[in-house]
Length: 133
Image (cartoon, rainbow, N blue to C red; front, top):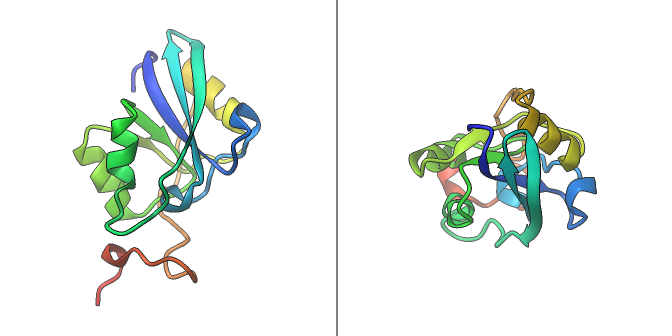
């Protein structure tokens, strides 16, 4: 992602910049959508997630927000490839406060890490495309 544009950061709650970055893309309850201009955060808004749901439509939802990138703690390979197919950059392996991640992204210093999702196979995780049957 360039230093200008819209980004969605997966959030654990609706407190916006004070929230923690969500560790699981498919189960994140909120996204902070931020406009970055140069090295500054121009505007932010918190958007409720539609939830994991049938068919795992989270990549399409995120793309519908008009973002060029998504920041998250972890996500599965299906979600990552779905986002990339829609032209959304994925910056995974991020933890800590949303505001800190956003400032680092705007400054060009945010570095992603391991993108794998640790939530698969956990109770309540029912997105069938992640497991062979």
